[in-house]
Length: 225
Ligand SMILES: Cc1cc2nc3c(=O)[nH]c(=O)nc-3n(C[C@H](O)[C@H](O)[C@H](O)COP(=O)(O)O)c2cc1C
Image 1 (tube, rainbow, N blue to C red):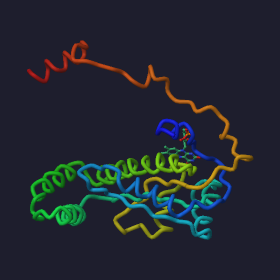
Image 2 (cartoon, helix red, strand yellow):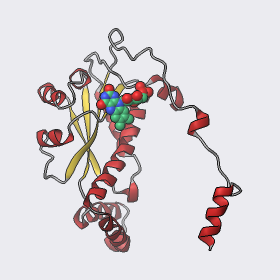
Image 3 (cartoon, rainbow, N blue to C red):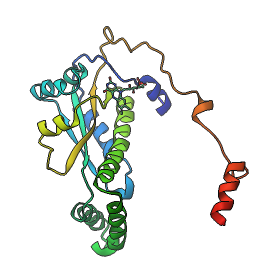
Image 4 (spheres, rainbow, N blue to C red):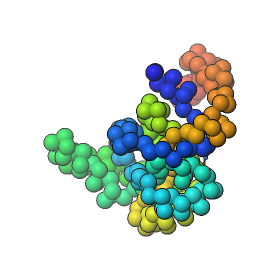
């Protein structure tokens, strides 16, 4: 099946049947997330994997009682940095330089530039920026799950502050950004299963533009002065 066919197959599963996702499929999905690109390669996020039923019961309560939380096989919690610090960025860049057998100082100037740039935006912006990066890995996980014929429900419908408390993320430098249940559809009980997949028509979704476009030409002239 092609990527497009897998994306057609997948849907935000509303009712799961409790069946277990094999470890190798879980590993594959997590690896796809790990390989996601991120701004400056910082990967300012991590994934917490939960299959403990008692813990899932608690999470369900703070996730609008969505049944997938307890009927899934595994819940992935994407947790992003709550800020960019010299220490956090240095740890990643040092690791990359060590892996590439390059001096640790190679990225020093670049590190200073991004830390200064981010600092001017403020801590809230930084947390938001890191969370945005985690969504790229999240999307990779969704696509990889579809390829593995594992059902998944992307979810923002949870109380992130309560989840951070529950998972002891509060004060750890991470904040939960988004969650993903992995499991298998309940073919009998899922009302969404046979609904048509609907997306914005291509004509509205995609616009081609060129420099010859009047607006662009004006903008180009303004930039050139
Ligand atoms: C970031 C994000 C958050 C979502 N939150 C929830 C959620 O909390 N509960 C849920 O059942 N579906 C949730 N969805 C599923 C969307 O409603 C669904 O992806 C969308 O309607 C498109 O349908 P499809 O994924 O079945 O093709 C979420 C999807 C995304 C991408």
